[in-house]
Length: 306
Image 1: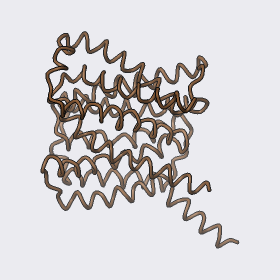
Image 2: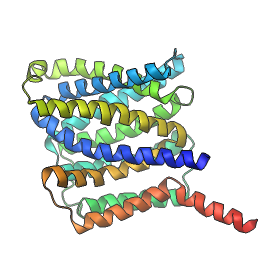
Image 3: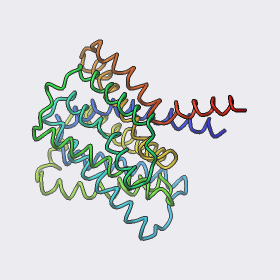
């Protein structure tokens, strides 16, 4: 039963990474048609309202202790305000392939932080998993680092990546005693207010420019906010609560693959052979990085002893 529950968690997180890959395409459309900071604030607010509705019907919300508020607040600052703000700004000037490569460093950064701050065990097989997954991302980007330079946009994306990794640590600490759905709802709703205040200062005409897009753009905005960010982060944070920060973060390596796949479908781009090789490496990385291979090996060894 425990194994079935674990596989269900893995399956849901895998589905979310596919949705987040599609969301990269959505964000490209949104930042090209709407003021990025104001759009981000409203997108996260939509996600927060979605999460609050789910939490209300699930009856998962309760009064938080001071420690829970602190962990949730820091998770919100890093995972909502800093991550989403720098992500939107970075995507305005950075190529999608280079951006995906930078963002794919989240699992490695999370693993290091989890070992330092959460005391998670970093076994040799899991280290191998991170290396395989990162190698897969390298192939997905075309097998070359030639375009990787620290431009302003790429520096923003690097900040976005590291901020998300830090937020996973605070989320893990908050969900030790608090329901993950409540954490997601509070982080998104409070974070959207912070993002909106920043947008008022950085984009004085942001609100008026939010009304100039086509109906299709607003459909993308609500789909991104409700499905990718609202429900997506709720599922992802729940996985962090169940299996740990670094094991969950390894699934982020699927996002570049799905980003490329949906770029082909919606933007008529081409998939190179190197990118297909990369997908194989990513699958292997996830199997090793989550500890799945290690558990299977230990189970077989246990049967041999018996």
